Image 1 (cartoon, rainbow, N blue to C red):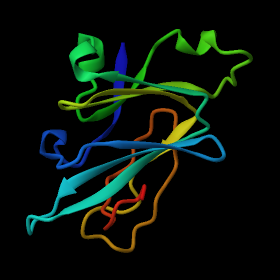
Image 2 (image 1 turned 45 degrees about the vertical axis):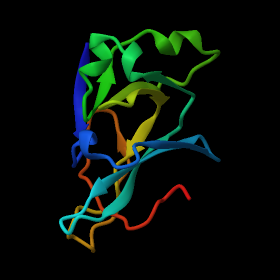
Image 3 (image 1 turned 180 degrees about the vertical axis):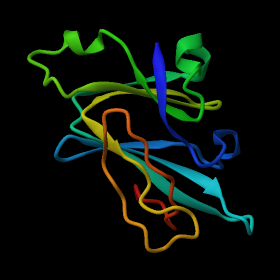
Length: 146
């Protein structure tokens, strides 16, 4: 069973280049994705997972129906993945998101930080999300992983 906690603010079927993933120091993993601007250009924003213990990718042709349920949404998944780890912290949760034509990303993480600003709202800062609370989407110009 899974529960949606955040919705992608764009359609993954409209990605020009598709998602990119980057493991960062301090147990962080970022998934960056491009989206089309109103004027027809593209910009990048990212979803950052905090306290990551493990992550996995499944290519679209190999995804199960349960993975596809997380289409353009971040879900918290009730799974036994965490018990496979040595001494996992109690705060780990199984997060999942599926991107059209690319596949599914699964993360064992303590929480996530959605993109830092809503489109058109330059003054809003990012917020870290733990448990089942959800954040709002944002816009950042340029590729955040380059």
